[in-house]
Length: 166
Image (cartoon, helix red, strand yellow):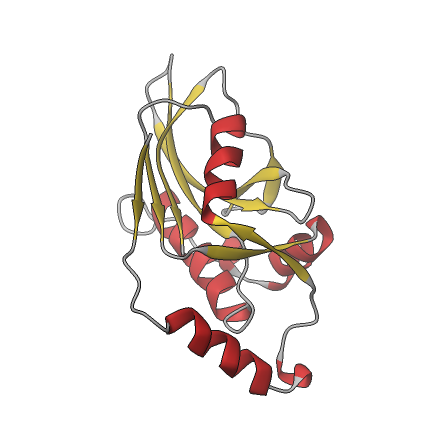
């Protein structure tokens, strides 16, 4: 597993917390979460996907895990799954990117632990891009962004290529 973390400027985390302290709760989404470190995210990925040669891109040191129900509410409220699929123009990787972006926008002041995952089918050879999220109870779930179906990663038939969490 190759892990790539974005270098941080000094004081960035402190500035974010200061901003959060000043923002009134009425401007925050109606969710509560639980902080998770990037190291714990890596351990969950190893447990749920496996520990082999794939790339993990982590943008932050900590993420905010939401409850399973809060992620489901978010999936029901966004419209990414209603977009039109267009071969090689707006396909699985675009849907995964849009869902991650939609989560980033919705939870811009609190964050959430929802990212992108690219994999391929070991026997059939096809590849696919989906999303994943990690819940407050440290459960790892996959999401098909084209229809909002939630499921577990198929470790026996799929091999991860890249995981990206911003």
